[in-house]
Image: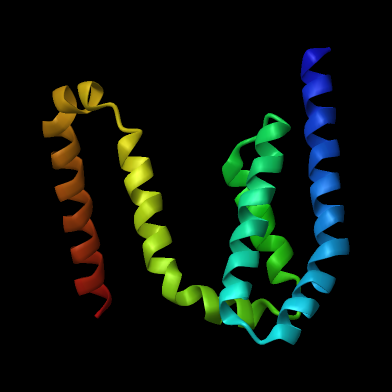
Amino acid sequence: WTLAEAGLKATVALVILLAAGRLLLRPLYRVIAGTGNAELFIAATLLVVLGTAWGTALAGLPMALGAFLAGLMLAGTEYRHQIEADIRPVRGVLLGLFFISIGMLVDVGVVLPLLHWILLVAVALIAVKALLILGLC
C-alpha cells in the first residue's frame, strides 16, 4: 500500500506544481515584462526553477524533476524567447556548476580500481565515433 500512497503523493504534487505554474507564470512574466528589466527576468526564472525543484523535493521526488517541470512550464509561456535570451549569458556558469556537482558525486574509491577499463572503453568509443564520422564523410 505504501507504493500506491507514494504514487498518489507524487501525482498530487506534480498536478499542484503544474497547475500553479499554469495559473501564476503568465501573469508573473507579464508584470516582469512591463518593467523591461532583464535582471528581473533572470531572477524570476531562477526563482521558478529553484522553487519547483524545492516543491518536488518536499514531495519526495528528485529535484531534477522539478527543474525539468519548470523548464516545461516556462517553455509554455509566450515569454520563452525572452527568457532564453536573458538566461543565455548565465547558462555557461550553470552548466559548469551542474557538471562540477555531478563530478563531486563520483566515488573515487569505486572508480580507481576500474580506471583502466574506463579508459579502454572511452578510447574505444572515441575510435568508433571517429570511424563512423570518417565513413559518413
